[in-house]
Image 1 (cartoon, rainbow, N blue to C red):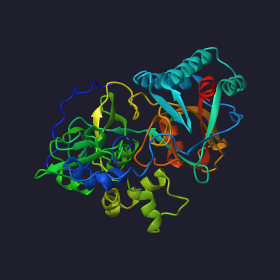
Image 2: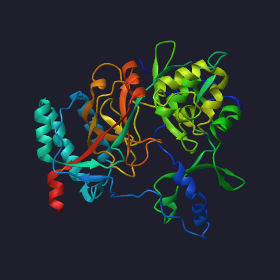
Image 3: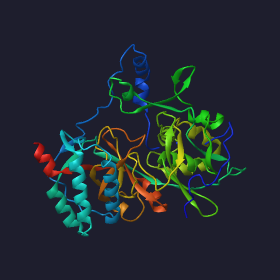
Image 4: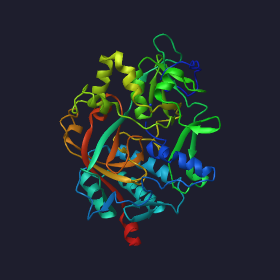
Length: 422
């Protein structure tokens, strides 16, 4: 059963305690703009133009037809993801548009196309009939990334936790600190069009970068306390990378937690660092490989983990974990992309070729299915990166931890709306 958030009162984290992500806050671009933005706020200079474009980009190219495909996923999960997309799109004003290459489609038309899809799925169409109807009713746009698109995976981790800390369960799952400040530059009229947030803390009246992972783990974070305590710092590290998860308590209750903010530092891949140092081979640095290496090298564990300065804070969730759009993520039917490149909430088609490194089963034979763009991630930047959410459990973890394959990504827009604009 599920523990109600706040049902327990875990003790506060002491000042010297340790504890990362999807979602949220600014990495490199925001800090690159920081000094100019602060100067702008004081009235002296303007912010530089953003590094990455907002709106229509060459990342998508319209093609003649929806590629032939046979959807290999569960239709009930597809319907659930469609409902989540609708929940997000219904919060947007009717005059908002989504960009598909140079075509702009109104939110109203996108909503109508997803409502049609939901009604059609209720008839339990065969994969061939579904593909044929989508080709008739939708226009396809291929994502243009170097060497196609790199697909990776993420999942919903479940870690053992206690409501209070003790000698064994001494690693806190921390809440957002009281001194963590986020600054949306566009709200202050900054001319750079920055859509991401600047993250830091105020020191002597000045906005400074927030504490790093090493700082937080050795000195604590002001005003933060522990939601719960775990005995596995490695599991917590990977939970932070996933951005949400489930805490499993000794009495059998389970509580979902989600992203509450980060310290704003850029994400650094410890896998790449272990490859560069020769500790892991390039073809053997999956999340499982990294976890096993850290367990086998406890003397180097903390230093390696702290080489990623990014740190993520959590909050209780009242329901299932949600993505960056504030709606539930659905296993096998949710992707995370760069929201400055691809249209949030849109219907997509992913095609990933067979990969022998994946666990035996459907995934090893390749993945071809419809999904919705419902999430984002700190490491998912630019047109050539997609993260696929595989859900909860050992199978989801096994697939997500190993997937690193080049594949094809398409976005689908309602044909009638696109052709009416041309």
